[in-house]
Amino acid sequence: MVIEIKDKIAENSIELNSIYVPQVATITKIKDLTPTEKQFFIKIDNPHLRQAFNFLPGQFVELTVFGVGEAPFSIPSSPNNKEYFELCVRNIGSVSGALHRMEAGSKVGIRGPFGKGYFPYDKMKGSNVVIVAGGLGMAPVRSLLLQMLEDRQSYKDLTLIYGCIDPGNILYKDEIEDLRKRNDIDVKLTVDKPDDSWKDAVGVCTNLIPQLKYSPEDTFIVVCGPPVMYKFVIIELNEKKYLPEKIFLSLERRMECGVGKCNHCHIGDKLSCIDGPVFSLWEIKNLKEAI
Amino acid sequence: MLYKVFEKEGLKNLLAGIISNYEMFGPRKVDKVAYDFVAINEPEQIDLNYKKTTLPPAKKLLFPSYESLVNFNFGEKIEIAPVIESRQRVLFGISPWDLNGMNFLDRIFSTDFIDGNYIAKRKKLIVIGYDTEPSDSNFALSMGAEYATGGYDLFISDLGKKYFVRVATPAGNSILESFAGAVDAGTEDFASYNKFMENYRKKFKVKVDLNQFHDNFEAVYSDNELWEKLSKSCFSCGSCNLVCPTCFCFNVRDDMLINLKEGVKSREWDSCMIPEYGLVAGGHNFRPVNSNRLKQRYRCKLKTFVDKFETYSCVGCGRCVDACLAKINIYEDINSIKKEVNV
Image (cartoon, rainbow over all chains, first blue to last red; front, side, top):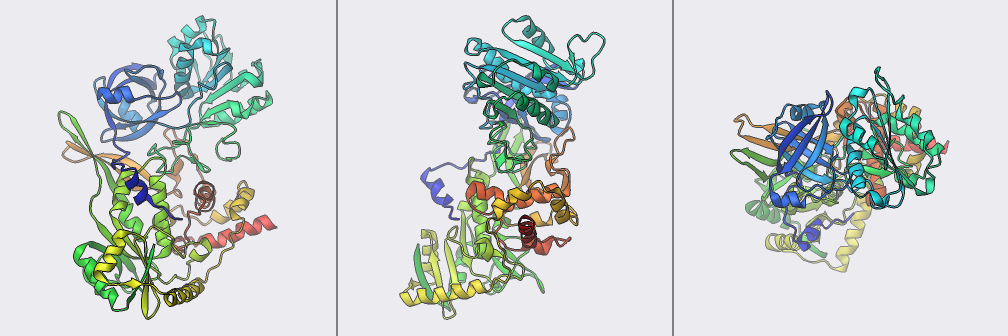
């Protein structure tokens, strides 16, 4: 067990800095999405760093509310937008709660983007793509969805299956209504608890998978939702013989550092923050606690 | 690597030389039974007869239980300054297994992202190892950690009449040359060193059979009954994590100082044995029960890093065995797990 870090660092003459230093950013706009979720528009203050902030769909940032804490959030906006990025935050913990109390113009700290595992929009070109999102799982996949729609001709059929508890929980409702008017994407919605005006499916999003008609060879599946959802979605996908190497899942875990040091997000020998957060089903097949 | 020897009287000069030129930490008897690595001002304070310290020395210096990472100043503009240590320090008398533990931490903090807060301290630390006596619960020999192949500047072995020194770095060599006056080791010195190591290895009484263990781990992974049996006495106190030379889990926190003008981002140790470890906002817990957490700890020590770094992340120091209030014993559990597979 010989580790010559002294040499390793001296050779590369790396100037030591802290990987925990956030960049100052401004919340430029805040929009209510549902009673519990808000959309934050965030602009990194330093223009050079703003230009250098390139992310891939599925990656996340660590956001610091100064004096309160830091938490990971995936980026739901289009990677092609260089001026600002968005976050979709549910008011549920100490950091997200503090964020919900902030107003436009407030300063926050941003580290990232992080995660080597992203939704492979490049490999998916030329294939059908089915996105299965549950609840807040819509946020990470929206980035992929927007990127694909901006480059629509590169993909075959696109399908979005989106399940929520009730119609009031649906995120980005207006955008989804707009998507339904398009004829180049199939949007299937389902809720557990419908109201009187609900016309779409009722039940969990798993129920809509048997309807899929795409052949396993040229179809990619993307799954993101609450932990309990994955197990049942995967059973249905296996039933339809979709290929594990073409099924991509974003796995949420507790993350403290975002850079593979604090070890909280481990899944077997993988770390969700640096090896993920997006994994192919093939990669995690033998990691018993992944799903 | 250079191999040198120096006379017995040389040690005192070496220690005096280091103390007058550096900030030095070494093992000292702090009460009737306990030893600890503390700042040393006189050569006589050093006691190399220690068998165990509660905290692993390298971790105490390089990765303390709480440390500031970044300072903030909230004026008109937000000023951000990383906390990068620049003090040169010497750690004297660290055991081979604790050295291997430090090497593991080095690897964690320099893989993928380089953790400047840790690495700056590490680069400034001169490490002098010594073959200390193993305690009754030490199984470093079985873990392959009774000998350190690197990570030190100097490693001193007591051959009785002389000290045999492995010199790994120019910094180590210059300390040795300046204060102890060593000469190159001859063939007869290597012969007595071999004899010394042969006897040294005989001092490790606890033997653990780890052959194929990391493969076997897979076989019992879903055996909930076994894990419940092994973990049923666990209080989830986290003592095993606190004393471990290779445990590195931490939480990142942000605090505002009482003047409301300054803030600090810091890290503090976390423990994979306490219930909050896997808890996320919204109330979902990825590791809700004892059995799940103990399995995770053993996986982390005995399998995860075999797959990742080709090494165990347990060095066999035995601290967790001594610290556990519920008498959970990792080496006995390794044997129980193997027995389960071989039934």
